[in-house]
Length: 214
Image (cartoon, rainbow, N blue to C red; front, side):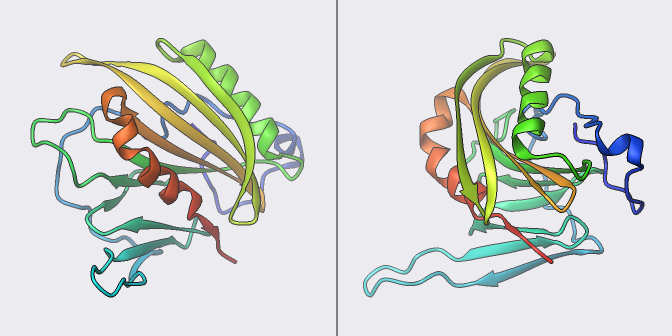
């Protein structure tokens, strides 16, 4: 996980050390459906209608803003946003899930403090080493770069196994790493392998909607 955000700037010694551990699909865990968590201080959710066609209205798109993390992200109508414990996870849970699902296809955002010399490639290299070392069945599928929200993003496509006392699943993931203002952002799209093609474009659209707030 990324080093948690704090109210103090990192020390000079810490500035060149990126203390990053494993991100297995962001907040990638087996989970059951539950009611959306209530909003917390410093987080806002606003709704704005998408453009509509004359014959068929498009679903609304909502934008979630996490003020402490200086970031916002858009997600389609019917998805839920939940805040986890620090270092702040923003998770969109797909509405098209079966009630018996043990894994919810999701997009998550994890935020952590890094030093002033850190960049997306450096953080991504650390994440890839951690995944290769610690993740069950890790298999890298692709590595590329693009621009998201005006920031350079390193994209890692990979697969891992999630092994739980209840089940074992092959998970396909796309991880985007970005660094802005001494904060690292890990945006991960995670889907049960048989569902991946079904959710892929929606999850990528959510990930690419991220914007960095002043």
